[in-house]
Length: 394
Image (cartoon, rainbow, N blue to C red; front, side, top):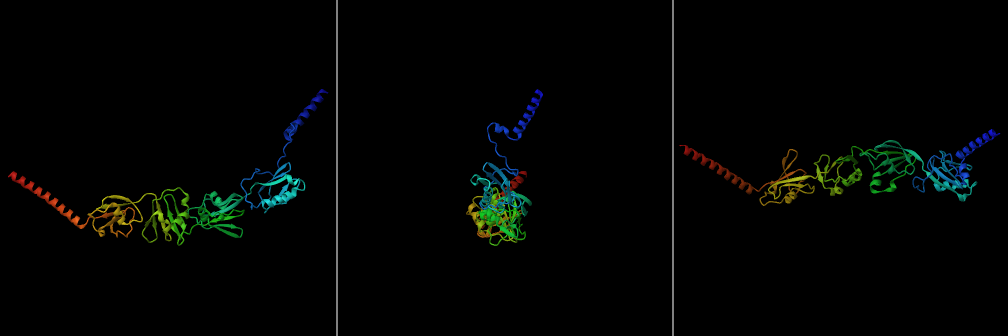
């Protein structure tokens, strides 16, 4: 008999342990009511990841949180657009807004539960794949979340290449093609031109036509922008996207139009400069200088100013009373400097030029006479010394 009671108590203890571990009886013994477990369809955290637009359309992959009196479920919208609710049935919410879906679900569960104690909210947004090709750093299929806009997605793929045509990005959506001016969006802040991506979208970023571009050359990058008649250098600079990089403090701009001499322009005049087709524009960091020498008050180097002519540099150096006529002014130019005659008030001066301001003819003649007089003095002195030496030796 004692052995029989011991065996009975042993099996009762096993049953009590199983109930405590797996059935939640421990909470019942303490007088607490256990919380209902979630549905077996729970696959994502039950919280809204982003603020959802009121026009957001539900579809496969979205998750909904549903409260039914004292029950709390998280359900997924299936590929056919339906959701299944335990003990209530299924309802199709695909293609519906959140408000419309909430109404349909509450009508369904209201047959079993008190409608005033039921609630529906969006838990987690669907994810899908979008394909992007063309002038971007990463091509191929990319996973995005719903309500992802084009500008954010392009940043996700590492941005566009330097030779991308950002004024006409294509979004192929079904049988339609949406053209987006990404430059206008990113530079001018046209947020209405930033569409949300949809499942199945294919994005193409065109390359610039190599034959009709303006090339911008910076110390850290070389980029091209499509040529357009009447477009200013400031617009080309904005289109290149370098205004979003570090400000390197450009000091000078050199424009090289095809079949034309290089010309220099000040930064302040970028809005009034119109490069030719296939022109190259170089932005320089180092300050450029022009050198002035000859009959001026101050010799040396002067900061290069694209709007100045030889007359301006000579005036800055200080005209000397012994300066010669303007037609005598010469400029030495090139790696192997060659002398050229310039019109001091009209012809352009380039960085590195040496402006030679000669003395007038009278001063030059006077210097020549003084040189001859000095030379004759030296020769006569040498002759007198020589004659005296010969006389002493006789």
